[in-house]
Amino acid sequence: MSSEPTPPAADESPLHALERELRVLTRRAGSSANAMAKRIHPDLDASAYPLLAHIWANPGVRGSDLAQQFGVGRATISRQLARLESVGLVDREVDPEDSRGQIITLTEEGAALLRSTHERRVDSISQALSDWSPDDVAALAGLLHRYSHDVVRWQATR
Image (cartoon, rainbow, N blue to C red):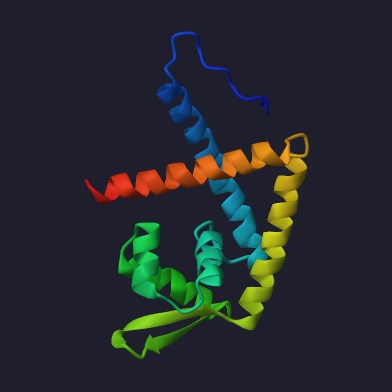
């Protein structure tokens, strides 16, 4: 399998080319997320790494906010959090402002494992993009952020 990007066909619109590249990126990202989760704990699946990373960046996040952030139901998040709690990576406490909700934080072990995995992932990206200029890396990060923000905003209006 070639690692070179597929050039768009002469009759392919930029939106069709973008859809194709997003499809490939999504497939590769899923595989990468699964590998990241397995590095943290062998019993975790691909959903664990982004969930843990979000909790790491937002300590004390509510379970309901996680469900909204990831576009899944509260029951799904509750099952995922139960799994993360069972392997000692997160703590769940009753929200003092709403006893129906939960406040989620990483345990010390969860934070240490996530930090280590995150550093390895950044190092891998650095190696993969070693021929890129810092400006190109920043431009890609900015465009991906803009894309993600706009898709979330668009989905909220549907």
